Length: 349
Image (cartoon, rainbow, N blue to C red; front, side):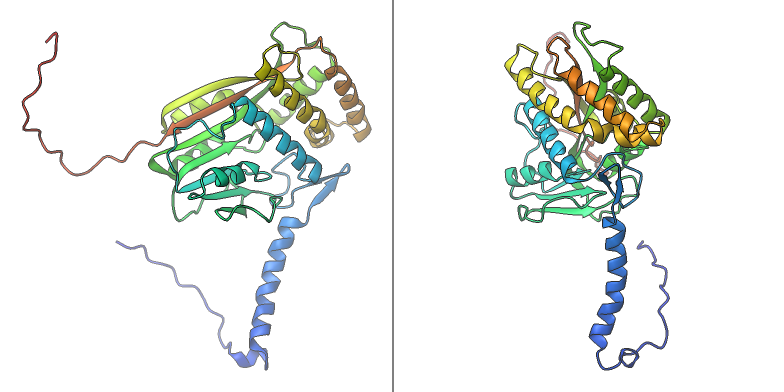
């Protein structure tokens, strides 16, 4: 039975005469007044401590959205790409028709995915419209809040969610909506970091500025209802959300070029760059809004941490978690035909 649609009230008495001799331009003007208001709600950015922050759903994302942060995000993308041995995903995809990139950021993953799969339709969403205008023809971007109810008319063959730590208040809800909008038999992949810095040889000084930033940042964001380290929790959330064949890979992310392994050394170089470039981006909002630091105090703390990170004797690292799973095929409602073939003998029976 088709759902009945509630009637929408129409303003009475409107004719072309209401707009004088230029009805089209007057109507366009009325429409433009609404679209202009919507556009300003998205691009009326907030500036704080010399950094620019998103306007749409203001305050729900703690990192900046300016060009400096966009550069850092692209560096982090390269780091993850090296960590994943050049792969954009681990899920066993064939040729997905529709792909959703949740929290697309600069759109770099979506664009590379579009180049890799030119027959796929790639959609990336984000709170900030910071993606480039010139993109592959099969790639599209939209401003959206992924924590609001999803309203897509079609489901996706692949849903990709990467580096959304401290951006999501309700992870089970996000996983649930991802499950709901994944086609049966298709895949979703979550990629995120455990932000707790560790050292394989205990060379990271627990009294250092680096440790101070890391510990205070994690405690403050958790107290504000965010999860800074979703990586280790992704597998459980995906299983609880209904996904099957859930596969979890944990990859070390050194900070610096101290590892002997060539691949880890390259990961560490990119990670060192994105961390040192992003220290203020990570700390300004949280440390001044929640912890009572002044801008100057944050800058001094970041300068000390940056100096410590240059010490080759400190072997710090994080971990990247890549978890993918399949939405089960829908069970057929038709009765199964009984086989007329004789049952084969099984050894041991």
